[in-house]
Length: 507
Ligand code: C2O
Ligand code: CU
Ligand code: CU
Image 1: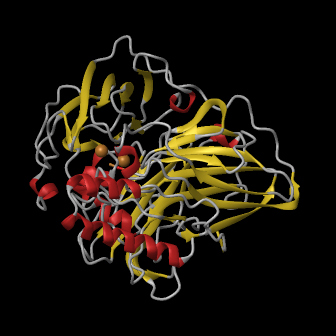
Image 2: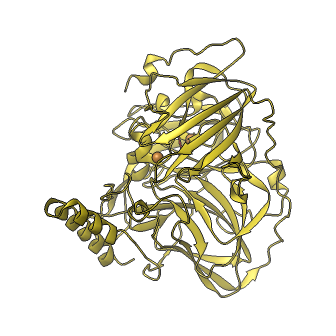
Image 3: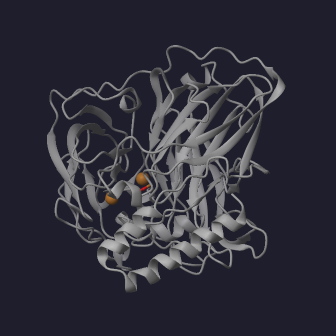
């Protein structure tokens, strides 16, 4: 999109707020509604090669652990002509390197906070001890270094990392702290899937941003939205107007919705079919062919797309097919149509092996003897009528057991639901078998209003009666406003302890 149209959008936004002073509620609503639909198809200049985050370097320490050094820093990024944008990044000015590790590996980090405020780094989707989780209880003060360490023990998957400081997550992610975390394992390595990083295996961190008149990020929520930023420009891996030179017939895209509030409904400009091969927690049992895929904030998916020599096609986000009810849809970006990335296929493409028809074991949790069934109702900014309290452990689960969690969003607008430490299996949606895109391992799920999701999850290892894991809505403004709770995993004979004061001294 040309700078001019972005500016116009900002000015309309200002007009909208001024209008609020003079127009009645109905007028304001009409105004917000009328300006609420964004269509950038055909308006984006795809003039920058898509940045591919570098793979993080590591060294092996005396104990044999592979250590990654991550430096959280402030910087400047040139997104637009004119002034640079103040941004945050990991080992750079915006976003961070892709971390890659294999199942069974012992990994460690030295995370240095060179920012002027405390933050944390959370490993979204990772099965690991609560003390290493990087949630709000593991905050790192400016100038300090945090050194988590664990053994990777879960199937190959596309995970990610991002800050999770109490009440400040939306701001810190929006400034640019986020990166991908790819887990490999032997089984996935043995499959003939596109896997040359940066060539036919591309990370795609999809984010929306709004720029103010000085080219700075504007994170204000639009009028009548359900909260949170809805940017009018898309950046992928930090690139505005990105294109990709395709050199192989098949390309695997690791899609991450790294936006604070926006739901994407991915699809191609010509509605071509693609294969969904993996969701949050890893490979599906078998590929699923589709031409649309919804991802709410925090969700990931791996898709494989076929290209023909010499062609050009765009990846887009189409209006949401669900997730919102009524007029709220418009003001929450659900009617938007966005051009995301342009793919330009070379005149000759290297052949790719056919996508395997069997990918991984399907989730097989035995819920016949589920130890517990819990219900979670998301409404407003509450989960079960409560808001996050850093000092309160909401409940405990027992290590070695499987539980069923029933989750429902009773608002007309979007929420989603993310659980730390585990990957879950969607048993049913309103009593029916889940659609194919919800048939594999998930750690974050879009909650379509009023649908009832039954999730099964098994808690293994890593007991800690005092330090909790989080569950929350991953619309970051909602999370920051308290739409989050805490649970501990107890070993045999243990009872709920107390969150150490030091861990929540910054309430
Ligand atoms: Cu991606 Cu608790 O977060
Ligand atoms: Cu998480
Ligand atoms: Cu929410």
